[in-house]
Image (cartoon, rainbow, N blue to C red):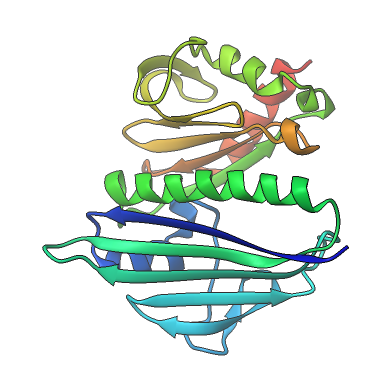
Amino acid sequence: MSEEFEIVREFETDASPQEVWQAITTGTAGWLWPMEYEPREGGAAPFGGTITAWEPGKRLTARVEDVEGITQQTRNQLDHVIEAREGGGSWVRYVHSGIFVDDWDNQYDGAARHNTFYIHTLGQYLRYFTGRAAVFSAADGPAAAGAPDALDTASRALGLPDDAGEGAAVRVDLPGVGPVDAVIDYRDPYFVGLRTDTAMYRFFGRNHFGATVGVSVHDFAPGADAERTGDTWRTWLDGVYA
């Protein structure tokens, strides 16, 4: 049965409204994935959507009807409101809304948890990498990466101690990079976020939502190669779950 949903996330950042605007319009490769917007109200938005609000530095709203390729959703809207804070920085309100048409509770749970992780990653980008160009790569694990403990398996393969939580400094061996110092900027049973001086690594426990563990890389280093990085992580995931 179809039912509407709304997921609201709010946060404050030291980044200016203009820097937040850049991040959510032209800088999405740095924290989500590459997207393009036609810069006007009524313009084209990602995934066949339409921009319903375009107020630079203040508001961006994009809406998709009958989401292509997603049978569980017939409407999807992302709304970003940005306000300048007194004394500097910004307050940001993000609302993801729409209609789910199947398995509502599980769809909502997955969307809510993913949104929390995405907005956290946006905050990390604004704090540590704002304005820097990123190369985005992503890879999904094989069928075995859908096991109940699959994210734990990936964490141990990275060398993360089971008891290392958010804020912990760790030494990890990243495929294609080698041993590096990193900070765990996010960790719960569903997601892991690692941050180095030149990149953010996001691990998605989609095994909890009927899919497989995946990884995305937001690489700010000069000469980063999206295809090579994606292939390297795909090979790593295949090996971890062989």
